[in-house]
Image (tube, rainbow, N blue to C red; front, side, top):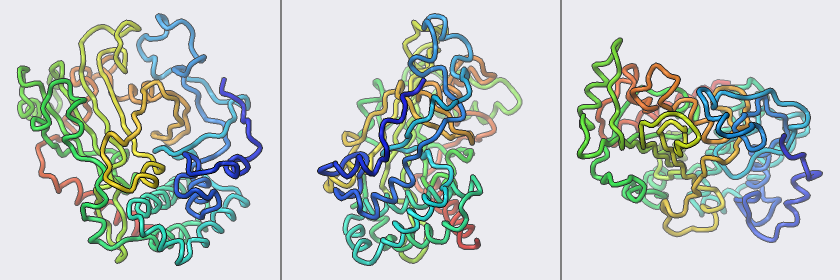
Length: 400
């Protein structure tokens, strides 16, 4: 069971905060329009549709829990699970706004006047992050078919905080460089990572995520097949048995914000906010004693760049400034259309696992599925595609 909601209102708690915090990431003043917008989008009192059995207290003895399909186990949410969800993270708990909530958000959007906008634009990373929040909630409302009256105001606010193209594609927004992932590659050299293109689901479509995404792959130097051999085998596997991924194979996912510039064009920026790794660590049996994320040999790591860090550390940023996300962390996910409260480990294991799947040989490296058509690519391909995807979504918003 989840803890009960302990606060009367979040704003009452925010008023006591002396400085910027994860609940007031954009400014030390809780009443700042950007903080009010953030609060409206990223906090919601609700009952999750599903409660994952992987949560502490939701399953019994661990030796009996880590069995096939442990990641699927769940129950329906009920009134006892009602809580205030959200925070300075990637997931958005908000599905829709009731009339009073919609009015509060509309007021906050109107408060983004010239003075506030100039203040935000003086911190380019922060302006880009706020625009990202505005476009993400617009996407959510389109998906849930809720509050269409808010869409024009959300788009107008996103356009007001837009920056020149030269700023968006320049180096001052940079928050991550690939070489910074080196210490987390277990002996694989960064120079061995191969960027690959692949057919993506909507989870990696910038029209839905407002993020560009890049995947890098490497097979250990002493393993067979090589990285290029593995890619070739994956392409040749259509309708046949997929290739066996060697132990030690590692993938890196990097995601950064696609923003609108002040001319209304989509621009892939260097403001990376999400970095993840996946590694096939062993081929041991599924079970509690297999101390990997999926409990069947696949290890996952994730780092996220909070807004608060962007606001309070205006100098150079890198992976060391990101927040490492433990895989046992509970989170409210909506990846598949319904709100589910579970752990990162359970949610990620739905796809990235070895057992209980016809693609077991791929060890959860879904980019290697034959229908994904994985192949080497140049650094610009995924960025240009993401810009096209966001541009299509903006055109959709403008047509409403």
